[in-house]
Image (cartoon, rainbow, N blue to C red; front, side, top):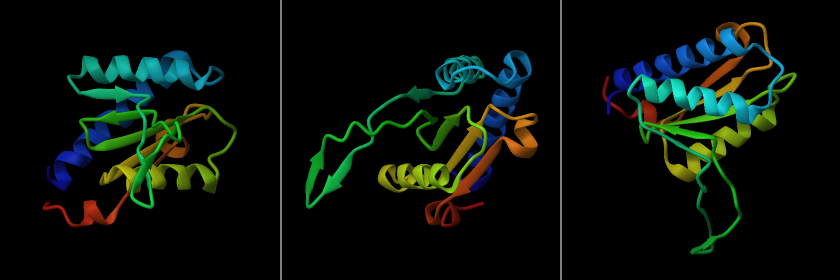
Length: 135
């Protein structure tokens, strides 16, 4: 996959989040926003996996830590959904950890408890794997 293709998927994900946010507005549980954005993304023809375990390797063995990501879109982009007052550094660290453990190039942190998803409710992150991709 190229940088351009990944960025187009990111654009579609943020668009889906805006669509969900406009209709439902802030104030609901993360799980509700998650189900709605999965629905919208699948309507757009994107492959979405949700709430799957993230493998944690320690000293050569896989530990059952019950660590789960919110969404994986097109097997390339991790989406972490929040419905909180503010995105904190710990939430960004959580997404970066998922990106590292799953060896993915891009991730998006989306907070539905905001006024405007595009301006204040999303944070896109890229890894060195993304930088190494062709344009």
